[in-house]
Image (cartoon, rainbow over all chains, first blue to last red; front, side, top):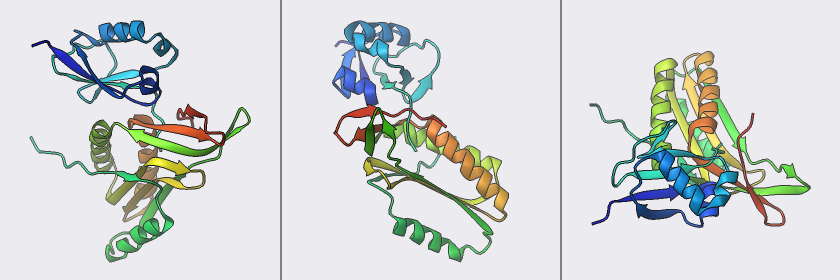
Length: 79
Length: 148
């Protein structure tokens, strides 16, 4: 069985990717994932986005466990 | 470890004035309260490049938002002597002029209610994973970013 991770995209990031939820092959760290996504979707370089690993916002490069849930979070604008 | 109780804050559609009035009325039985503070967020018809905002469509990452809100709630209750705090945030399409956020804090004396209310509103805007898509009158859109 191949190791996978779940990706959830929100707001403008979801609009660029064209999908809200998808599964992809496991990638070892958040920096590597970001690099991969930017290659796949060059438009993403025009927007700011943070990442959450298993619902926790991360601020530095973080290891991604197999089966982790990753969220791609553009700047918040609630309230 | 003590399990944190996660309360939902999200409601589909705008928050009606009658709902707010009912919520205020419910507190008349809590006679130790001496002050309420209420913040209401209303969708503003901003003009951007000659286009007027007619509505904001709100979406959230609900699991993360409610986990974060639980943490904020605990920190606010630890910091201020509040009697109670109620928070409602709209999801879905909210038209300009409609209410999209209702924060309601109560305490024995006014400072706790007003200070807690202000702090919670700031934290909601800065820390909750919620996104507003501004819909213009010609049906084009842009993604909002919070400013002061």
